[in-house]
Length: 229
Image (cartoon, rainbow, N blue to C red; front, side, top):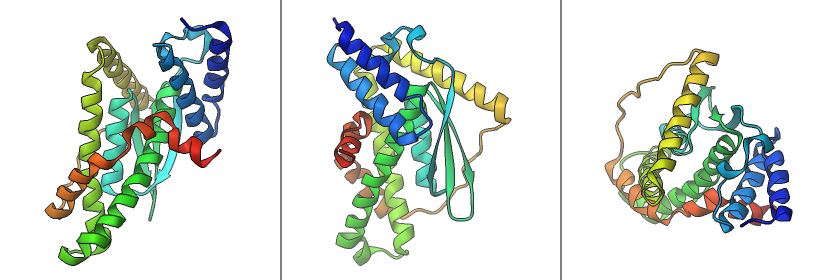
């Protein structure tokens, strides 16, 4: 049973999570979830009257590479959001749509996991890829990250299997509602991915090394707290 003092702290964190700063919003949501988890609770257990329940949009600037788009799709599906991206010449802006806590989690996890994958991909290239690859470094490391994203998807799905089936059903419902909201507001449609050649060795290595990713750090905000005091 959670005491009133602790619940009040959670309420304040949830208010902070609805702010306009993506990083502050995500960090506050991660702390709120961690506190609730210690008491066997989740954000959904906090009465709706005590927090905003309308859908929000959270943006994240990244690249338009296929692995980045795939990562956004995996995270949005897992956390009950919808996502679309706006592509520019050398970058892209991803917009996650969903409940405040879900959209904030997607933005933080996207930022955290891409940093982890970048470190792993660079290390793999320096240790192995440069000696066996017949493609350029950017191409090889991007294919490596495609494999890593596949592993992330599996790891998240395995985590879901440990939850109650009712929770999974709720996530699917939130995902459908978020996509409906996105279609109505932006008149978006699902794009089909074009087939592309990938380096099988890089993708396989990325998949295998994906087991090294600290998924829990990306979901609890542990690294963010450490980096930002």
